[in-house]
Length: 108
Image (cartoon, rainbow, N blue to C red; front, top):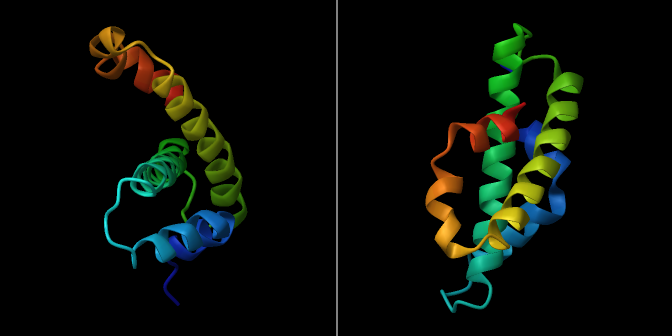
């Protein structure tokens, strides 16, 4: 039997995924586009960080409980990261986005 990780992530954030599904039927207006981008980015960051962490620790992707636990943790970190980024002065972004420290602070 094949194990897929996408359903694990979808069940952890059902409201966000429902919002993205509904938003996909509406034309671009700018009103709902930014929140949809934020939701998509935070979910993607959390998924990638969770899978990366599982591989980094040598665990198996089939460990669904571990995957869910780390997805929740990284999803919260991603939301906090996006909020912090939104509150950052635009002049400071060149130092914030490209820095290895920023990425390592998010992942670990």
